[in-house]
Length: 327
Image (cartoon, rainbow, N blue to C red; front, side, top):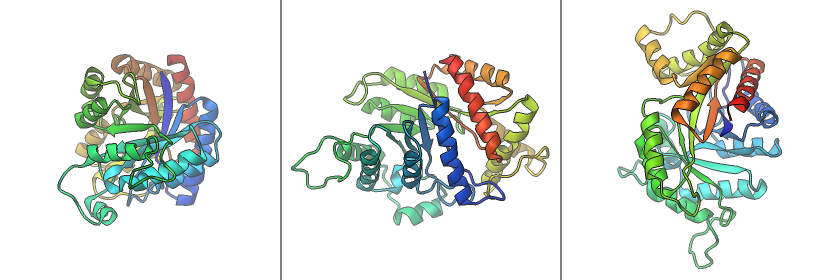
């Protein structure tokens, strides 16, 4: 089993987007040394606390500052883009950093509907996600000299394409196409088990993948003690609650007082962020071991937003040490 890292390039209260991007590169360099297989970034728009909106650019920033770790998108929200443009962007990245670029594709907008309209200019009623995925893969495949439209750079790079999802739809599509599948259990755990089983049971071998490859995402916040970790985790809980309440902002400082969040919302946030391991190294190990034993992933991707960068580094270092003992 491999282990990887998802970073949202969080902008902390008191910090700037420039700080966030510098911290992302620093985290990636450490992650490379700690043995993480991949370092992925996600496309989110109109989010005051996330600096990875121009995801391909940030991937290039990270790839340029690291040596061997795979860098990719977890993911690109394909409905926001023309497949050709994505193929050109990731084909360029793969040309600059051969053998190191991943492309995860999502079906959601990654933002609110007003921003989605600003991104797309028009909203199509039909769901073209499967067709767009195949079109994109075609641009990245071996060159077709007679093709009227070609991705240059892009054709022949065969950038590995993943399907991302938080429901059965993505699991079924990834299985049908024979592609690796990553489940967003770090914020949508409800269908994790069913999606994993559906993907494995219906997987069809393809030219890209002979056997199913299932990745699950887990929120991690590790510290010296359980109490320290719970305190640090409060930043992400508060940020997520504010987002759900329509008041998104920068990543808050940790707090012992979450009274601003209504109890029903606090319970909801606790549920949606429930696929997580929070605590001391021993606690995190027990929790990760239980999740891995239950869901049997081929790969675990950890993620976690902590206000203090040094403490975020320490959390992911602990996670890497724990995961090495579980692989």
